[in-house]
Length: 470
Image 1 (cartoon, rainbow, N blue to C red):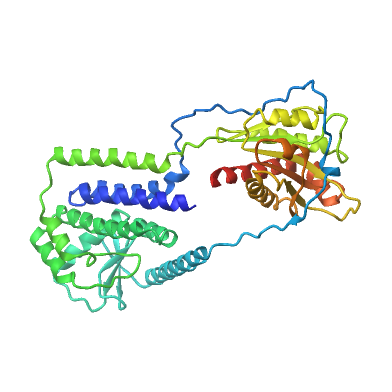
Image 2: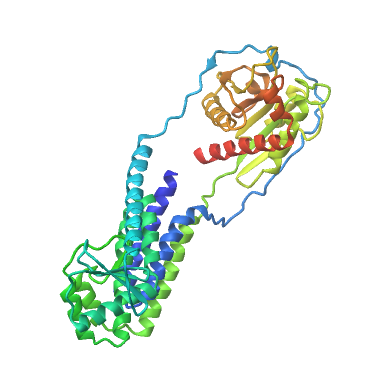
């Protein structure tokens, strides 16, 4: 999430600089409008629209374990191993900054909804049709403004005929161009991304461009430019406007007068600037959406038991099915390698020798628990706290456990155990006990094919979280 915030700030900043340097002083108002709205949406969405430029490693969905001929030398299993003390699970706490974000975002959202309600109340007042606009007189603002096809004018405003015609033409453009849609969109984005300084600058630039566009179209409709300029000067002294509206009085008078009288650049120069903006913005978009090329997370999924070793009741088949579902999720980012694809028995030594040839980043051993007390339920995980990978194994096990809590009601914690496999593999390892097959509720989950798919999906989500955290 932090990287998303950084990407959006950098990409929006670069896009805004492009606008200031190449477009702000150009009379390409329609293009400027779509560039500003389009760039803000694309920059915010780009990190979710990942563009992968290279695929260096093909996906390996599953690699079967071939039978080794060497005899089994150590049949130590988790059942007769010596368990260490239970390592209590640390409840992940939410960072205080998140609560600050929510409070500020809640304030802006409340203000936005309050303004929307205010606009609804204003539009319910009696109106008079003026061309395509519905004119409503108001007393809580001294500015002329519009909201969609509603135009608000101060009740005690005394206007000359030239001023009146200029205002009507100006607000008609706002209505026709649907500038209110842009404003509402900006307010929503402002509520969510209030921490991004370029959201505020974009908001100001878009509103300013609205006024430039409306000024230009008003003059092109036949109003004398001198009369229109005088109207801007006469009515441009007010600071407050009705929220969520486009206002004739809004924006600096000097900027509007300068832009109104400024001649258009040559077609060649305008075209060159637009092409430059498109090319540079495309580069920014690719940067924002570019998927960081990380090495794939190689994970060996070891489905416990098999063959004549059935484990607890139907344990060997349950974990094999979950292992198979995980292999189907294998991708270029997370390569899933399974130790067995059939109901076949492999010794612990054979499993270790196979695992150590895969250069795995993580080994996940799948099991289903059992207990003499049928009320005992929940998931738990084991790792070896005596090797060089203990810190990674602990961190990975914690993540994998937490991702199972939507399927199982009890988290029995992360524990230590000197299993044979964990003592001999050359990578971090976690054993997942996926519920108690002797418990009625857990048994229903474990025996249901759809739930097995969900278990596999939740494990894979944990693996994605592990990869992203590295």
